[in-house]
Length: 443
Ligand code: NDP
Image 1 (spheres, helix red, strand yellow):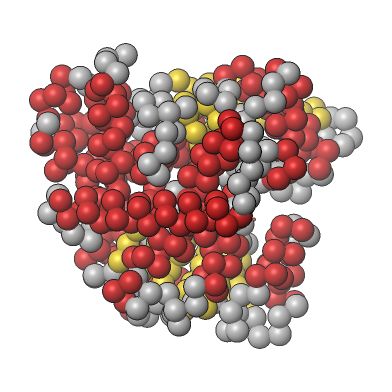
Image 2: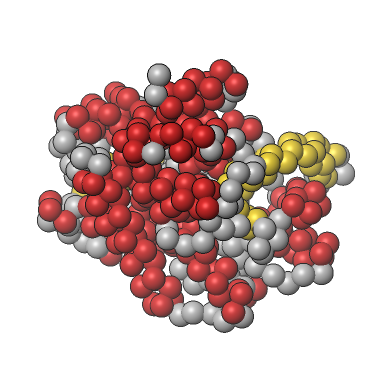
C-alpha cells in the first residue's frame, strides 16, 4: 500500500467521526502521491505525513457567558494549532452551531497548505466555538467573546498564534476579542487580524478574500477571454461572497445570484452590492429584505443557486454546498470555470466531475488564500507600526494571487497533470512545509 493510502487509512481509523477532516485529508493524499513517491523513503523514515496530519496541539475549553436577562450559558471553545513549520499558527475563528473538533481540524489542515501557497511566513491553525452569534444582542456577543478570550489568551500571541475572522466572526467579534486580550495581557500587539482600521487593521483586509478570489479567477480564465462579459453565479451573502460580487462587477462580469442559509436570490439585473451590504452588514437581515427592494429579483427558499446558467461558479458560503448533482447541472448549463471562495465547498465527487468534463477548477486553498495573505500583510504593518495605503495593499494582494496561480499551474505541469489545480495546490503547498519540517528535525 502506498504511504499516502496508509495515512488516509490511519486517519479514518483513528478519527472515524471526524468526517470533514477525513474528507480534507483524502483530497490531499490522493493528489500528493506523485510528490511523495519521489522521496518516499525519507518521508516515511521521518514520519512526515503522520506529523502533518496530527495537530501540534489542540486546546479545548469551556466558555460561559451571560445573556441579557442575566442567565448563564455554556459553549465549547477550541483552538487547533496544526503546524508552525513555516511561521506562527494562523487561521480564523468560526462561530457557528455546527462547529466541532472535526470541523476545525479540517479547516486547520487546509490552512497549512493555503498559508504555504501565499509565499508568506505563516503556519496553519483554526479555532472557534459552537456559539451562534445569530439573533444575539451586541452585549451577548461581547460577553461570549470576552469569556472566549479569557481562556484563549494564554495560548496565542503576535509571534505564536494569530487568529482572525471566519464564519460568524466579523469586525464586531474581532473588536471584542482584541479588547479583552489587551486587558488581560497589557500588550498592544498584532495578535488578531481583521481588526478595525482605527486600532491596527489593514486596508483591504475586509475585501481581501473576495477580491483575491476574483483576481485568481481572472488569471485562470485568461484563455477563455477573462471575466469581462461573463455571467457569474455566487453562493453565500457574507464577507467572502459580498466582496467577490463587488470585484466581479469591477472586472466586467455580471454576478446574478447570492444565498444564505435559508434561501437564495436570482437578480437578472445583477446583484446590487450596495443593497446587499446594507441588508447583511448593517441591518443583519435575511435575503428576503433584498428581494423586497429589487423589483426584478426573485427570492427562492432553500438551496438552488447552481441551477442558474452561468460561465463561472463561485461557491462562497460553506463546506460541501456543491455536490455531484449540482456539478452536473452547472456543466449542462454551460459553466466553464469554478473557483472556491469558501473552504471545501465542493464535494470530492463534484470536483472530479468538473475535472473529467474539462471545467477549470481551482480549490479554495489557492483561490481563497487572499484573505489570510492580507492578514499576514496586516501582521507586517503591525510589526513595523505603519499603515499602508489601500492601493499598496491591493497591489500586493493581486500580485500574491497571480503568483499563486502561476505556482499551482507550473506545479501541475511539472507533475504531469497540467490544469489539475487541486494537485498543483496540494503539492506546491506541501513541498515548502515538508522542506521546513525536515530542516527543523524530528519533534
Ligand atoms: P460569513 O459568516 O460572513 O458568511 C457566510 C455565508 O454563508 C452567509 O451567507 C451564511 O448564511 C452562509 N452559510 C454559512 N453556513 C451555512 C450553511 N451551513 N448552509 C448554508 N449557508 C451557510 O462567513 P465568510 O464569508 O467569512 O466565510 C464563508 C466561507 O469562506 C467559509 O467557508 C470560510 O471558511 C471561508 N473563508 C473565509 C475567509 C474570510 O476572510 N472571511 C478566508 C478564507 C475562507 P447565514 O447568514 O444565513 O448563516
